[in-house]
Image 1 (tube, rainbow, N blue to C red):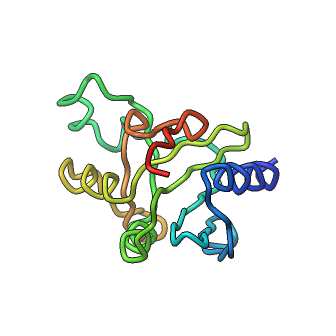
Image 2: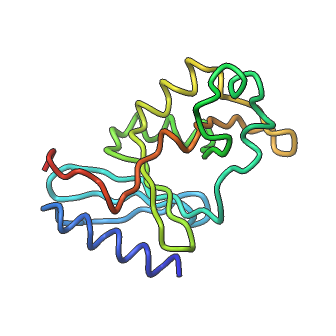
Length: 147
């Protein structure tokens, strides 16, 4: 299912007027960087599900921002910094149910830093950035005015 969604995303990028020239995989092929002839770069992340315990990990943020979703999305800090360093257009989270959401990496970083939504994983020691899903946009409904 994920591979089909990946093909659909590549096709959608082409519909935006971009031609995919290469794909590089990261994180055991769970992440992919798509580069286009036009110079755009998209970061695809294949996920099983949302970060359902977001509200438990960041209770202070939820208490101070009751209108945001209690469910979030997360990305290891090293991959977010990679996206920022490589001027990625959008980070696209792809789920097995064929629904995809995106966020600009600069916005994700700004939200995570401003609201202290960065934590260290107990098991791995890796630092992870998170955002409530309220800040993600549905890829299928993406505005194409930039193109």
